[in-house]
Length: 536
Image 1 (tube, one colour):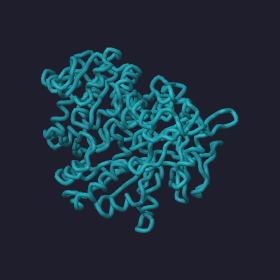
Image 2 (cartoon, one colour; image 1 turned 60 degrees about the vertical axis):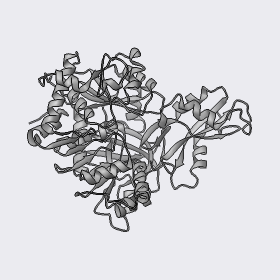
Image 3 (cartoon, one colour; image 1 turned 120 degrees about the vertical axis):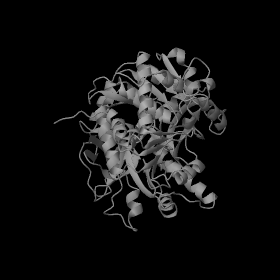
């Protein structure tokens, strides 16, 4: 017998079996059971329908990990509307593009970020604007709790199919415009099953939301944590002191953190007399992307007493496609080498590393190829971008999503990223388009030519660096300063994208046809590193 895989079933199951159990610890101090979380989601669903939102319409959510995000997401999805979470670090122009590109019909925005939407509301198709503190926001916004109070808990749940798109996650690509990653009920559900299995989630887990919910739906945890009846502990961003206090007072058992967040916690731990790092529960932590340094793993496991896992993936893949938690091979001598690798493919996922001809590289940890992935958790397509979709799935190998990361494979089938093929910088867990930064700097009248590459950063893993050919032609007297250019980009880019490192040069290395050889610049910057990717 076949049963459709629908994301609504995660909250449905929690309400059925854990209705009277605590579901959410809110940033405002309230605590909600799964019955209460469910009813608030029902009321939001009914309120959306009362405002004309129908199945297939897009509902955007701009929120820093509060309970409102969970309620708005489930409320939207229960009526078949497409959950469209937004990165709260962007600038108004970015939101204008996304809201217009997705044709967003309604938005809930936290009071700290609603002003960014207010600035462009007349330029977008959105008609319904809801916030969690209307008094703190200029413009005509409805109050979330007042909307719920005025709504019935009765709504019409439409028929839904597992192959229908239920979420769109926007991610920075190699071009300036973000791409909308379309994920169906099926891809979301199967990915959440994988997360549940590999993160060993159970109903007595207490999950701390340090990972942004907008990042691929919090790596699927908005579904997985709810589905097992575990507890969500919400936050308003990452602050090391708050994390440590919450871990101990709420008996947190699981959290996710980029290497840069782990380093912030280590710094806090060492500067504050090595406080207790756990409550009544043992703590598991998952990090992702490029590998954390051995010293980071050692301090997290040996000093904090936490158990660290390392996963790999992308917005397009769920994200989880590999895990380094190879317990049969981990011992005191091998654990750092193994946990620094991106790992091996998870269940139902075909992960390969192939050369330019699409042939698998040897498992000798020497031959380098591109990582390609096929699995049930991989995205359906890019929103309104058929050509980009075709290229992503058919560059070297037909039918596989091409990750753009270059890696080796060891004798056990565990991959390790060595370099990046895509023109992307990953700084503190955020994707940054090199081309977007170059286009921005090209607008400065004193810039004749520019090339952006990732440079090593102790804090962020890697950070953008600009090589500038000044309009004056004189690198010693460029006619513009690094501070001038930093200020110029700060006015035009989200804060995490701002270029802070500059080097003025007479010319950029190019091929015979004039194409900039960024590889030469990268080799120069990463000469003292063992690979050309950052640990961030």
